[in-house]
Length: 308
Length: 253
Ligand SMILES: Nc1ncnc2c1ncn2[C@@H]1O[C@H](COP(=O)(O)OP(=O)(O)O)[C@@H](O)[C@H]1O
Ligand SMILES: [Mg+2]
Image 1 (spheres, helix red, strand yellow):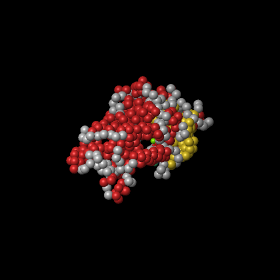
Image 2 (cartoon, rainbow over the protein chains, first blue to last red; image 1 turned 90 degrees about the horizontal axis):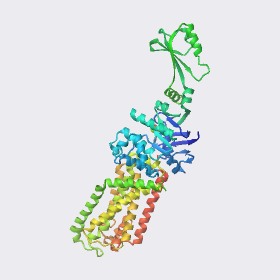
Image 3 (cartoon, rainbow over the protein chains, first blue to last red; image 1 turned 90 degrees about the vertical axis):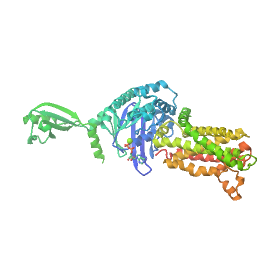
Image 4 (cartoon, chains in turn green, brown; image 1 turned 45 degrees about the vertical axis):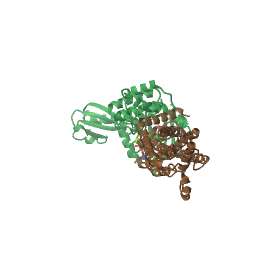
């Protein structure tokens, strides 16, 4: 896949002297869903704001679709739709007016049919003539998405799209996002919810303290850093782990009915065979077994610990 | 040139104006009528003609200027301050639109509104006094130039202000006094020589004087000087706005 956004050596120091981004390098591939994952204050919004033209960078450069965001701002901005983190909306305009306004602002000719389709997809069509101030928070979020989509962008930025959003809207939103990806739109979302990245993204970038500490395909990331757990349901509960098994990384769970073994799924020798041998040699019998992988959450916590 | 974006901003601003049309019209029209009742009829009948023009008639250009100045500033400053305040400015900043286009949209709309207001006051005045306009073309030229210049000035204030008080303070503390002291309600020649000289440093004198000349063909300073002064002020505003966008002052972090 070719890249659609290239961020190189991007730094940002705010007026007060706070450095929000530290020489960030990042490549976004055409057509992917990329999740920028990081805790509050990591610099996610700052990074997006620079790419979209809301904040001036202190150092470094960004190209979008091969164009420089400063010199060729018309080309780059026309490619981008932005859904901001905050619910910033007008008050007195009606929904449809306001979405058409954005389309005009981006220099596109009127297209009522398209606006209708976008509003329908986002379950906003019923509210098309409603004043924005009468909308609920969830509907305002939808409106912001509709506005970002109104000029048919090739790239969509969603800055913490599900913060304070109900389950219904979340589902709607992910459907819209998947449809968009199918039609070739590149999507970059920021979040500090790991499940969100895990559920949606093709690739994940982890940012903390203004630095991107890791960029990986989601699967690869989980394989690379993921330890796995093997859980055995014991036939007869154990009170403590037998002396002869102490060499294995074991713990008892569920009041002694489960034996949990943690291992590195990437390593050549997982130790499972020798564990199973030792278990039968010690007469420990089990009725069932299952494995599960640690979530991005665990990985993330590990990473943040490492870098701090 | 992103003409559609200019149109979008212009229409957005005009529809905001239309929503508040009553309040933006009523107050200047009512105060104009009050001026006529108080100054034109009650006091004005005791004041002798100035340069052969009855006092009620003489104050019309000044009154119009007073409204055009204050309305241009308040409308344009609010027009850009409000999106900054509520955050919707992000949309304009992220759009493929040049600084010039943003300004033409916002300032154009504000200037349109105050030009219309100026004309409405002119018509209102026509009910109270006999008016002839000696040079309609120059009358329009002064009206539009003033609207544009002070809308630009208002735009600058709207970007500079970071609270509502700052938004109001310049029109209130600077412009209104300067307008009153700039010969809106008297001829500068009526002042003692010292104050005549002081008045020459008041930029608004030149606007009122030139505008009045387009009605009655008499002026405190020559028309050429008036036009040059407006042009100069316009240029200064353009330069400041250009600098604002270039540096992102108060617009971008
Ligand atoms: N306008 C600003 N001025 C000064 N500091 C800022 C400004 N905006 C953000 N910051 C700081 O920069 C850091 C990164 O902020 P942000 O990019 O919003 O993080 P995130 O979106 O990951 O939560 C934070 O510590 C924040 O306080
Ligand atoms: Mg943020």
